[in-house]
Length: 422
Image (cartoon, rainbow, N blue to C red; front, side, top):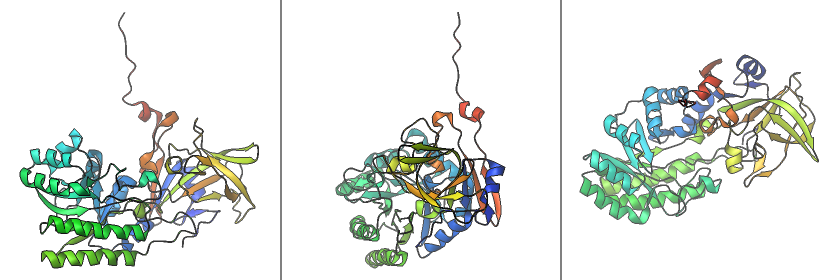
């Protein structure tokens, strides 16, 4: 069970105040050792394929590649990121897999040109790929008809989800595959992020049935992602050993049926990156509004959108300027600088503001939002013309800048004021 202290002075042995003084705030900091620990958790699986949408900085992708982790891409831009980080377009298993429900024109052109393996999430994708790249083998992402997640917005299965090929259409898709000269080498299912072991286990039976229906062309199955991350001290980590055994049993049945090895992949995103990340902010105002005390910091939902999107909970800590190891606690609302009522880090799903028990703090002290590595920077925006934050990676006791802070010139680059002629 994780412990989240309410006073924090260091990240991976590096003084937080010094990082903020040197690089400014808001500031994302990532701990490479934590990513390696989470990769090691999953080593029983034949292949770990990182869902880079969670945190796609090139330095993170390079770290994953050097640790033997494959990568998933959901856009042409993510394919280009993977290639830039040193991933090869070809290999067995495929180093890069493009997973989506559509091809935009750029993505289709890129997967055809570079020979990127495709995990098709719609019949239209099969048709469009077949028109341009007959003879390819593909993976199918199947929507099993049910889903689950920590929020309705992270539920990726069932009839209200846009993701995957509806399970009842599998037969039609296989006929389509035959007509287009393609072959199905693998199946993938993912029902949502933050699901528990019971719901994750339900996928095994659904995927097994689909694989048996496809037949001996299957050489790989993917358990998808969705492994829960502990954000609260009371959150219980998933039993990875039990989860692996469930999937391995499914794999063993398929190998017996097909008479050849079947690779078992897992596709973590948040599981690898959430706990490595810290968002450092500075408290710029402390306001009393009726019965509520607000700590207003210089980071907003332009830096971390999960609370406003899902009512997501993130642990938080204060960095005392005087080095105090403890301070009296008080219930506070933590908000950002944006001209938007929803710019609150302490809220529940539906936008209901709540308080958090944090140490008493002063203007100019730092507030750290923890477990902020997944869906933090990657969902960042320039709302209110705010620059994107800088990103640091701590590895081997060294804090390295892996993205410089965006400048105002960066923000307006490409904007043009039309000049009219009189």
